Length: 416
Image 1 (cartoon, one colour):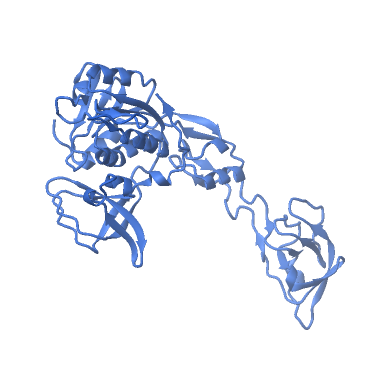
Image 2 (cartoon, rainbow, N blue to C red):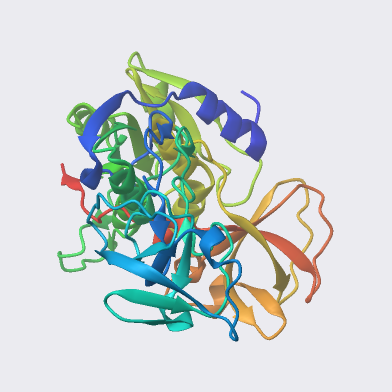
């Protein structure tokens, strides 16, 4: 089986997956969900012409001769506040006192600001003319009727919920959230609450990936830890229930106790690809366990997190129905040198921050952060193609941002 490039591996995973079916939810329950159809304005916003100022609604023609030396006076028919209607029609020689947001009364085509007038309850005096449409917000200025305000595949933000409310779109079709089960593999692993024993380490990437799934819009199901026995792995995955994607952590290499290859080579499995020509993710496997797609990630925390950001995130977004599957990318100035890449794609975790001359990308290296893997201190990845030359300090580089911290889904998950 050939080793795939990063682009080939990404394309293979995404081509295997399809967006999940839609469901209809109250608009207030759609935060961070993905629209399953376009949202179209069936009414304009605002729905009527309204005053942009406190002042007086007038006929502009009545005011065209007004000057400071020869002001004109109009009869005031009454006062109109926001949220109220009136039967008054502004006829020649009349005006209506109006408040911000109130509907423009029939006959009026301009509003004069209150501070530009002298007035009593019965009359208003103007020293300057008004032009037609002055200080009037026309119907549909913000959102004309028929406007596609959001497209299918867009993620619902807090501001999108406000748009739904303004348009009266109270029932929204969104894609179902992907159900993703995560299983850590290894006899050496123990949960965080257990005391350490010789030869054992506390599992960390199980909880990091579980949180990442949730923040990227999935329903994460933590399956816990399975030891290095094929029956234990099969049993744990079989108990995952109805899920849309399986993720294993560890066991993807070719050692005697790396069993994901054997799992997917068995009667219930299928290997679609194994191995990617890139650092950190070389031993990644993608296939199926039964009918369910499975991403077999490396077990080392930094490698599993790079693989998750580089491949699994887009898989979750594909299942969730997103249009945009690529991460946010930006340019930054490199704060330190990087070596040539050789024959493989090279992922470099970086920390991006604002500097005096713009954005700066600081490479994170393991020997500088002995207490934590570098990915835990990174908010972006530089992805460099094979045979790329060395990068020098102060060069401009493209950074794929790690967006999990920017997601708005609530941090909850199902415990398996």
